[in-house]
Length: 278
Image (cartoon, rainbow, N blue to C red; front, top):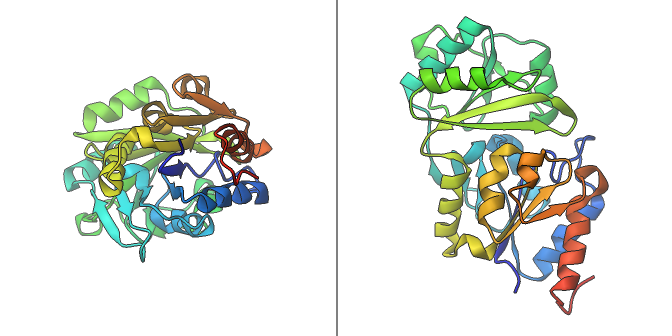
């Protein structure tokens, strides 16, 4: 049996520390296309930074971005579903970040915003390929949104106390933690509405494809990928993932730096005995 569709996280899964997708990984994704297996992305990236990757791998199924806050159709990239943060959530996030002097970004459908540029802004540009715009976070008229996601960036792993403080202050919030392969010490705390997240996103995907999670394959490397990896039939954690991520997945692929997706798919497609296996 082959999966109906295969979903890929981006950073640390198909995009390596050089910021590129290795040609062998693209070749292995082409094998999925040949077998009529749907291809899509499920990522914490905003859609404007995920879309070029979705186009590069020729996505054929709905794609999840903003940590689950937006589901986009592969047909003309039309929105299928979205869930923005509420104004009281945005206000609580900004108040908390101002008090603890945390660097925070707000995301709408086309851009992202900060109160001032710094070295983290420059670093994040490596992933998003554009700098944020400046916004006065103290001006209520400028923070009306709609914003799909807020991201607090830490230059070390955020402590449990930090996460607890956010959960205490911000109502109905979903938290996901991610990092990029090029800067593994940088941690992105993705904040979205509680009605989003990978769990809700997986439900939206299954509804759109009229399938169950047991018909899907997914690759990932971050804590935010855990629900996908533990729920779909073929959940594959990259070897560069943390142990807590690998322990929840049914399979482990070699590191993104070793073209793990290519190696896993080559072995998987050979094992299932498809006559077109490379």
